[in-house]
Image (cartoon, rainbow, N blue to C red; front, side, top):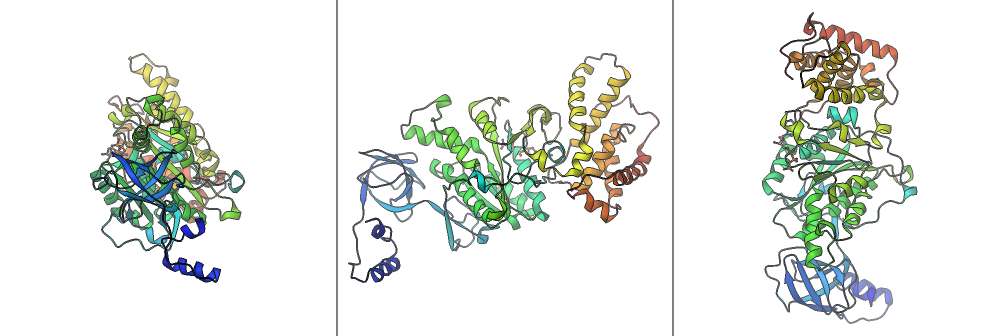
Length: 517
Ligand SMILES: Nc1ncnc2c1ncn2[C@@H]1O[C@H](COP(=O)(O)OP(=O)(O)OP(=O)(O)O)[C@@H](O)[C@H]1O
């Protein structure tokens, strides 16, 4: 039955089967069909499909499909993958004998599609020759290689202090409107010359927000190497639920070709809510915050698919940047803690820093990268030495300094140094910096060259040094991005360049009284 049935929908395949068997088969076959017993927002209950498998696609009409999700003897619960307006009790449902899949391939680059593989950019239908199931098994442990190559984001605070490696899962979390999407988009934009393909998966976002993101990607030329998978806020919950899995299959296809891929899930809070909605409608028992018991599993099986494949499998990588929205800075809520424990680190965005205009509003103390440090370029490691510690000390001392306490010389110096680190970490959106540009300034900063420059003219001084760094010999520039630490000679060359470039900005007094930053 199954061999025959799997060919029900392909007449050519049917005749091939007949020829292979060498006997005549009637060109029609029995079809297993049931009927709809109830319909509720995004879910249909169906009776009469005794042979249906878990996650099998079922067909309601030429345009409406669903995924069999709750399999009971009497009835199955189906997640609808489209609008249910025309679906009525009593309508016929057929089995398709296949699981849900999505077109994959180079044809998708530069396109905007929905999780069913249909174009959303007004372009031609996707004529991909290959399809992959949306739910796939993650690579086995022996098929994985350690994370060893950095994924440069072009964002100073991340590349210097919370580095990300190719194949890593790094969570971006923070309250609403704290710049989460901005970090992901800047990272995509920075991949223009890095040979990294990108997949941006918008889950349950407002159409205007997605349009803005796509416009920014287009303007910066990033659509040339990006696929956008989109579901909007008013889409059925079934589409929102499958969106990240479909996007991951598209990304995995490229990874399995040996390419480096970056995927952004924006955001998994909407995904978790869509799954909660479906689970409650399917009458699955609710748990904490009314989420079903397998809410951890839906995210862990998704993020486990991001990895760095071993050389034997082509050496491709899939780096994931899942985004989660917190409420009232509560990072210990259910979904954020789940995601924190699944991923290899998190970048926490603080609304307090955002209000102060310290953008990107990354809270360095609450952010961590558990595997990226090993992948960070040695050039960074030679210069970032005490940066994190100096900054943490500054943040601690800054609180005391607020009370107007009289400060000793050492404390005052630590605070002045910390202020300059903070100033350096501020970076405008759409302004990614190259590795060389970051390391040149970073070295001068950690060596205290900026401490004698009034903070009010810090930006001008930094810009002056960046202009001067363009004159660096090419061999030094290439060594900055190599896999070797900086030699003493190179360090000295960089420092003497910094000294010369910063000289005009220095003043005799290194503690401006009008300093308000
Ligand atoms: N580094 C930056 N420099 C300047 N503006 C920034 C920066 N980062 C974010 N912004 C601005 O902050 C606002 C919020 O950013 P964004 O939309 O990325 O936040 P979000 O946390 O993703 O929001 P939401 O919760 O709605 O998803 C935007 O107007 C964006 O332009």
